[in-house]
Length: 357
Ligand SMILES: Cc1ncc(COP(=O)(O)O)c(C=O)c1O
Image 1: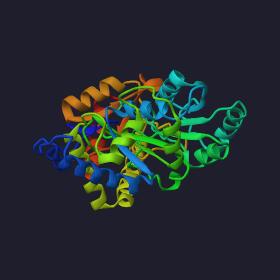
Image 2 (image 1 turned 90 degrees about the horizontal axis):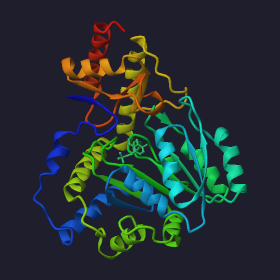
Image 3 (image 1 turned 60 degrees about the horizontal axis):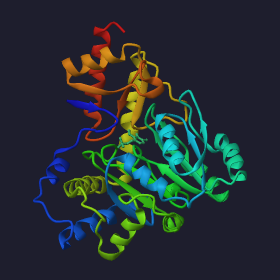
Image 4 (image 1 turned 30 degrees about the horizontal axis):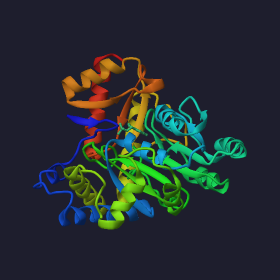
């Protein structure tokens, strides 16, 4: 099956194979070296002070970051423009009084739109600012750099859900203004699902140390302590998945992060143009388009995706959240290249004709 899905994604043979390595114990030199190597490869790519691998999905990493970000009695501001921003607010509400702002209609957040909300929340004492980097439900790339820079100027700790963003988008411009970031293995990194990465700036580290312990498993002070002592994790990690992530990072580094991102940009540009030419409307606001998720309207989304799978062995992402019943997502994540993208688009065009859309 040729997968154009928003995660899990197709995983290349080298990464799959890396999981087959003989099992090692997580309390031993071999694991310590593996973990240290992988974290060492992640940190320069992200530009963070510290990174930790959490065994769990993207949500686990987001919740870990959220619950380790503020002391008791803290107040948060969450800006959302889709289902995952809404969920981020739900996580924040578990621990903090949360101010929530929602932008509807597949529009993106930039500083102009965010500033009045940040100002108002800061004046009400909000100390945590949180939002999604790449809102996967319709594929919106929010301008987190300028927004987080401003939120920090207003005295807030910044927390970004980058689950479906990294490594398809650069974090170079945000490294000094994002205090907590997280992403998951099964999306743009092209790995199987099951692990996620949290990372912190210096302010993020101070925030972790100042926050109370709100859970045993996701206590990030525990992760920091274990890493500092021995480069281990507090509990048994998904060792095979860490091997897979190392293989994926090696492929990324071989290609070069810049080239990897440009390649995604080229594939997305090609796909967006073709989808438009077929007569579909890709509707995300101009200037906030994604290089990894292209969502387009179709009332026959379920029939189209079923036909694509049954006849062409091609699977697109279904519509999601506000666009569940009237859209499909052509996603460019995982083991894809321009040739495969062209094949997927040819199948889409043929299936469209067959269904007389
Ligand atoms: C932006 C974003 N946040 C959070 C999640 C939840 O991730 P997971 O299903 O790995 O817990 C997703 C999943 O698609 C996502 O795209």
